[in-house]
Amino acid sequence: MPFTPARLRTIAAALLGAGVFLAAGWPLPLLLGPMLGCLVAALFGMTLRDMGGFGTFMRSYLGVAIGSTVTPALIAGLPAHGASLALVPAFVVVIGGLGYPFFRKVMGFDHATAFYSAMPGGLQDMLIFGEEAGGDVRAMSLIHATRVLVIVTAAPFLMTAFYGADLTRSPGLSFRDLPYGEMALMLVAGPVGWKLAERAGMFGASILGPLILTAILTMSGFITHRPPAELLWAAQFFIGLTVGAKYSGITAQELRVDVGAGLAFATLLALVSLLFIEGVTFVSDAPFVDILLSFLPGGQAEMAMIAIVAGADVGFVVAHHLTRIFFVILVAPIVGRAGGRRGRR
Picture 1 (cartoon, rainbow, N blue to C red):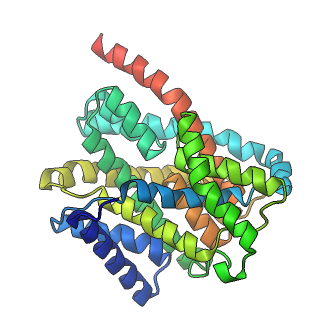
Picture 2: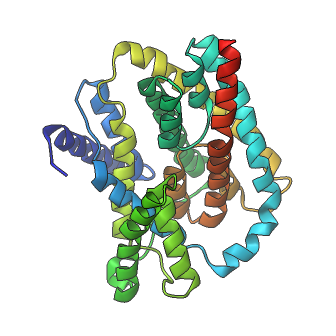
């Protein structure tokens, strides 16, 4: 990965943002700090660029962290959460049903851009589907990045202010305290799982591949710990940097139209999420923070990282986000094509 001037500026902005968050004692400084530091730099006209393949490599260790929580006890407990998991498709339908008319009729986007901007799936997957359907990739990128940024930024402050969550603690043991054999397996499971999943054509390969491979190693008893805290801190940094760098080159019109639409949509999503969260508390005995993190449609990687740091049930949270993303990926292209044909007629 060449360290171009744009990448060096991006790293500097991310480090500055992390430093401000650390000095202020704000939650998740190595995730939110880089995200907002890069956003501010982009708004000041700096050209930024994410870390490319190296950023994806670091992201793979979040998959390892999630996979290390997949124990026999977790698998045995999933049927007990069937009621809340069954509400996820309804959650997606309500979001899409409100979001599409907003983007299409209120904001004036074309069908493909409006539809895939309204779908709360993975950012990369929605951009791929939207581009294939003829949508505006730049607009969709800014809208989804704004959705993720708003929700991922608001959730930690909400959790600390109203629920007393401690988001400053270490996400795991230091590398000095982990068995070297396990640490070696985890270091290998990240890139190997990513590349195997990528070769198999799996969506979200950089997270799901390492997740599955590490889960197999955990269920087999070869791994009994999470990755070292230092590695997860580095993963947080590059995940936050990647979201913030998407605002590079933003124009006044994009800020007004695309980011404005993303902010309005994120507010709408928050209201819908809170209604579903309240409803899920009646059908699930999971802790409220677990339910909150499961039904806030931020990025899967970002919400999983918050769950890890918060000490939430990571398996419960990730199961709901994967259900949401699977449902969107399976259904969205079919509905999107059908809606496009009706629009042309």
